[in-house]
Image 1 (tube, helix red, strand yellow):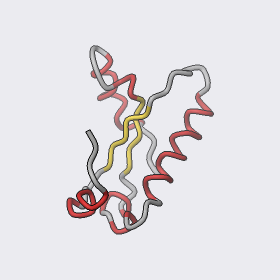
Image 2 (cartoon, one colour):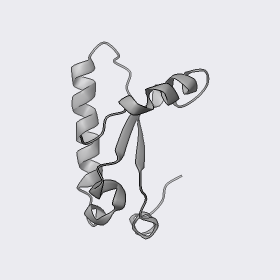
Image 3 (cartoon, rainbow, N blue to C red):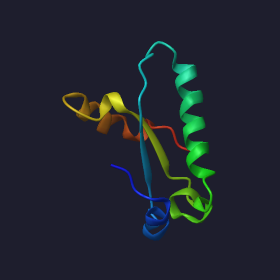
Length: 86
């Protein structure tokens, strides 16, 4: 499902986690570029600069390959490596 921008603004999350579909595991440079673009698109949404997650640069982007099944454990282990704004 989806949620409205207004709901997210009211919740003012401390973290924002975005799952990102990526199938080309061989091209790490392109993956990093795409993750940076996703973070920028989240941070630059109208009104979102006031969100705690954006102000604190706590936007995490993880490959969706790690979100289910046995790879879930790998995803949790990779959490610190998920691209952030820093």
